[in-house]
Amino acid sequence: MACKQADEDADCLVVNSALALAPTHPSVVVTSENIDLFVILIGIFIFDNVYFLKPGKGKIAKNIFSPHTALEKKITDNILFIQAMSGCDTTSGLFNYGKMKFVQTLKNNHDLLNVIEIFKNPDITPEDVVDAGNCVPVSLNGYPISASDTPSLNNVRYKYCMKSSFNKSSNMALLPPAKAAAQQHSRRVYNPIQHWPGNKKRPEDWGWERTINGLQPVKTLKPPVPDSILRKISCKCKKGCTGNCSCRKARLFC
Image (cartoon, rainbow, N blue to C red; front, side, top):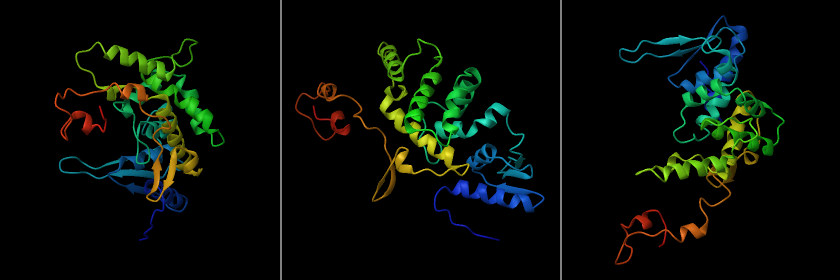
């Protein structure tokens, strides 16, 4: 029995360790409850004798899967993009957009395949990744991304905001991400898509900043809203704001 300590992505170390054993063993089984391991196995699958075993629990029986036959080819070929863009251990997810939403969008919008190919390219520039990444939330919201009248990401966000403003109640968290935030998200998504197959990139070039506490994500380079709008926000207090005031909780000063 061998014990290895991961310096970076532990899931990637487990998968690569299993693949390293495959040429000299009749079969290799990766056992884990962490489905992310299986996803990476599918994405960088090389050998036919590597399997994934998900242990049983209670009345649920254990299951063994082959990465080679687990999913249809279109999903298998692009599963690393789906995993990273929809959220994993090293990237955040787009609120209210689960992995099945990405799968269905990929099946219904073939133009998204051209976007994914950019993320697979190990020699692409950050600018090209950002431009391609901006198309993803647009596609998730049902717009074609190859038409001449395809709206920009900020325009899709504006349309959704205007539509929500007529509802009795609305959740602003459901808004598509702002362009500046999506740009940094796309950079961070590119990094694991390259790292999992072995193309290591410098994190600081791809949406991360190094601090005294280690790497931290660059969320956006712009404020969430203009100062002119923040100055118009006020609570309903008639005797001055207190510690329990909603504006104080939101760290606003009305």
